[in-house]
Length: 79
Image 1 (tube, one colour):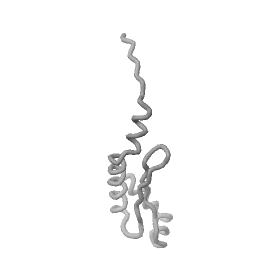
Image 2: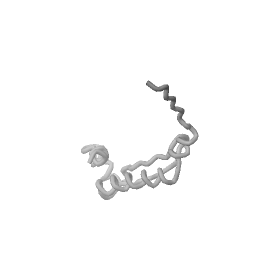
Image 3: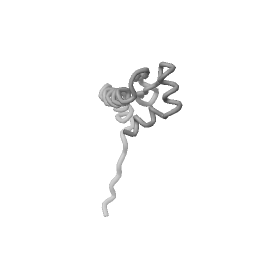
Image 4: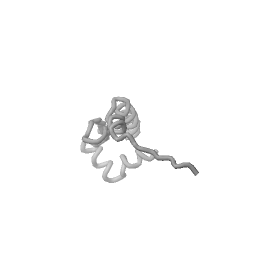
């Protein structure tokens, strides 16, 4: 057996998680979810303290009601 040691480059991982490439990947996933749920939803990308984040949220009253009754966003994530 070899004595393999792995040291994670934490600054490299942090910069990767905030990078524009990661934001583009997240934007693609958020857009796909938004396209599945229909009108009344919007997507947003922002860079937080540790990583880039994407979200899709219901903005219209009709979409909010639909999401509450049918878990529309949750179902769209798992498709």
